[in-house]
Image 1 (spheres, helix red, strand yellow):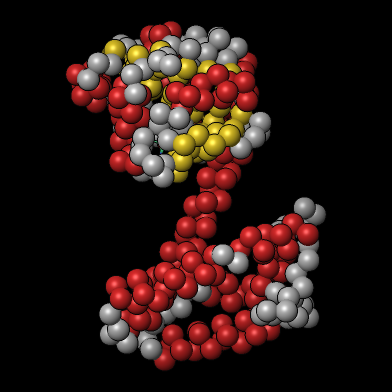
Image 2 (spheres, helix red, strand yellow):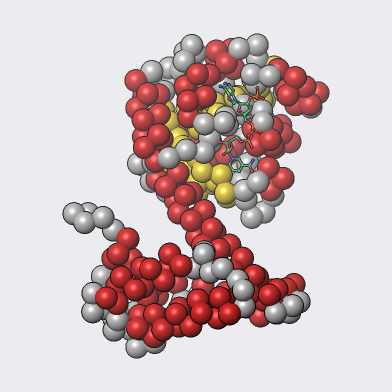
Length: 288
Ligand code: NDP
């Protein structure tokens, strides 16, 4: 079903979102601080709003995709939000999302926060995912239109949940990239072909080890770090060995060292019999 939707912010991502909505047949109103960025979308059938207020006035669903949360407030401050759904797809922190939800609610509108798990060229293509949290009724009302951007996944009433899970997914990605870069430095130090190593050895290995993670998640949820597979002491020795091997190859193990520090800390507490999942206990602040 076609809807009236406004998009505030036509940078790389905002333009991709507006373009996908136009392609899906929605009536799209667009606004951008630098007006010329709206030209290609207007040529495709979008309506240009002269001000953010005009854009908010035009549609029940208003999508904001701006640089950061302060720019969202700047853009929305002189608009009349009452009765609108604000879907804020700007990247931010959980606390910022909760604050924005209250700010929007005080102005009589519903708030949904979104975490975009895609780059612009992936929008409206299989594999693109957007996490949403906040008002469930607002999400339900517009779910079909949001599905024209990417697979929409609602993750809870707490507006901070989508940004939190977005950050958690990025964290997993950075960890994987850190491992890849260290492995690549070691492999290239021995002049072994990196692409071949990556495709034929590393990726199958990472897929196999990733398959263990749901079992770790269960252990963490149960607070049970018992293992019969590979305990922390064995991993402590393994990491020592790795770090020495790196140095012998003339490669710095800098991205691996933080993990070694935490393993050393945990085993020093006499918990070397636990599995690696026990390291999570070292990451929580006391009094959690
Ligand atoms: P761009 O830098 O391409 O666009 C930024 C947008 O914010 C522009 O429309 C810019 O307007 C606007 N803007 C910046 N400051 C202000 C302000 N003070 N007042 C009004 N408008 C302002 O960034 P993207 O489009 O790539 O990113 C937008 C959001 O999407 C970010 O939060 C980003 O993290 C998120 N995102 C982006 C991804 C990506 O791959 N690009 C992936 C996932 C999330 P102007 O054109 O006038 O400068």
